Length: 183
Image (cartoon, rainbow, N blue to C red; front, side, top):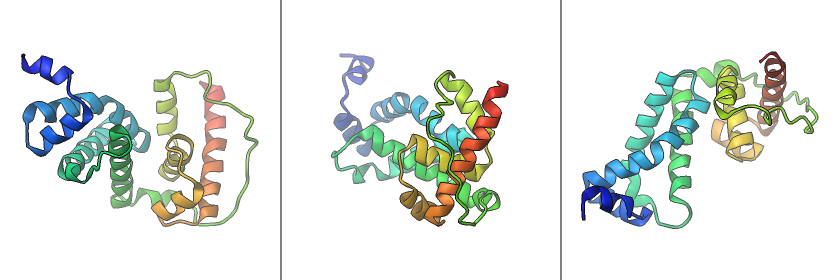
């Protein structure tokens, strides 16, 4: 059996085991299998392609360093995604972009939730539009609308209040509603 045939038949369990054993075939397979999807995750939190690539690389370094902590319960892809999101958040904190863009107030204004602004756009178009959001808005929008975190969880992750998370999400939606009709 050739290495490409072996690669095609690798399960997530085999990939993890192979990577822990420093098997280059398993390492390449893990990267090839998840890099494209995870790049999409990273780009939602980053200002540019280059920054997204840096976050992706840092995220995969973390994945490879901590593979032995994956217990096999739950989705392997979900475990990797969580690492990528946390790496992106660390990058934002490191660059102090989030604190510059988040108004630390508890003003809440909620927009009607019946407006489905994203339905008529391709994924790449939405990604480009989301990347135009200020970092604070974009981060909360991604965590809430795409990753499915609650506002309380977002507050804990970003060290902001739940009200600030709600406010930033509402403002992100308002910002998107202004941008999208012009596209």
